[in-house]
Image 1 (cartoon, rainbow, N blue to C red):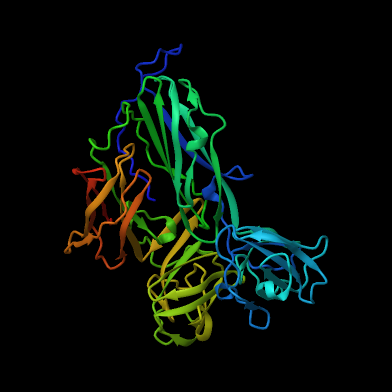
Image 2 (image 1 turned 60 degrees about the vertical axis):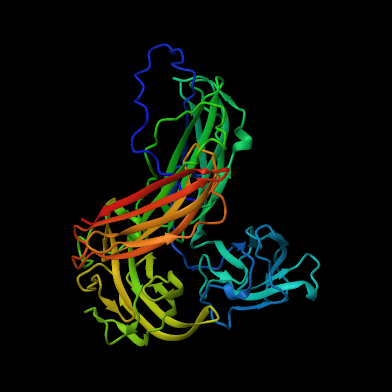
Length: 581
């Protein structure tokens, strides 16, 4: 669910400086506050500063860790050839529901003379493969069984793959139901593509009010809802007291993809005199960027609010809505927001060294029509609507390896001197026959002639990010803007609403606006619900002058009736405006 937008100004003035002695409470209300922070487990830096690339294994492992995802062989994602990797499903295949258990054995390919693992594993769980103090064998067999009765009738999946790292083996490779998430060897040490993050919810009762009795606490995140109401309900905090220990929860963050981490936390309490007080906190940061430390940003929080008890009678109280228009820029290395979209400072990468990040778009095309002046190797043509694209850096790091559709943005990190591109057909959701192959230089030098909008075969260069000291500069030919329209109940209200109508209006001021009417959902909107009506995408060309000085406006108007009394309607409107400089 999307976080409730926070007020731009607090409803109360800041309190005067505290006197030397604690004052008497100024009224009979409480003033609760919540502040969320994120720390990588075992680390001292912030969660937004941890980065990793999809790394190739260069030396035979001493140990490996696999995540058991469940599922069939057709979800495999690796570039080992058919002689090295083979996978076979039996019966219905491994389960896919989180928590379902299977018995997993991992042996050398010779038939089980070395047993690396033999135990029950839950879907979503991880298991370790090792044979201390020895390195693993060159090839492994992983067999997934229905239970620990290892008879042929209980086999759900069996596979073999090359494990010595002399061939292609990368972090996050998928082999059927199993995914490599950690490896350890003498040359590279420990390499992992995930890290554990701990979110602490710091609750305090301000000294200016009375004692507070906690009633509800929850964090709504892109990883799901974490509800601590049962843990905190009834806890009493004196004026000036902080809840100890702070409630907390852990999540595992995948650093091989760009993730917008959003944590919206709300707390509700009441005073002994029967007044309610509440507060909320919004924490956001981006992970997966190969950039300098990215400190979490915090939206300004309003002063705590309070409403008198008892709870309003739903038969006599109208619902209260909060419409939400959220604007995101999904490309440009995560450095653009809708209110700071700017044309590129430079259209050619000549800063020296390597770009910290580049973006290409799959446009389709042949080699001879390439517009780049760079002399590069290119063979074949690719013009299908859907293809499989594999991009590997000069240092053999996989930068992209997946199904790609026409006009899709490809965000690449871990760039070095060059990249090898292979574009193939898609067969049974896996890589098929080769259509086009290329190798070209990716250094930021005049000789490379990396220019925005130039094409390399079927790919078009549309963005590069450079680093000068600690300052990252993004130069983007396009801004890929996504508008999300949603609604939820206004914070602090509980009267359920039955949505009646919703209309969004949006677009640039120099064109006719798009108007969309949405069908209301059948379900009633409750206090913890968020209904997303839909999204709208717009790609802004930042180089041809068409967006310069143009105002963009997006509005959502929602109407509803109170679910308990249809004679009590409610409505709300939200809007987002931005201008490309």
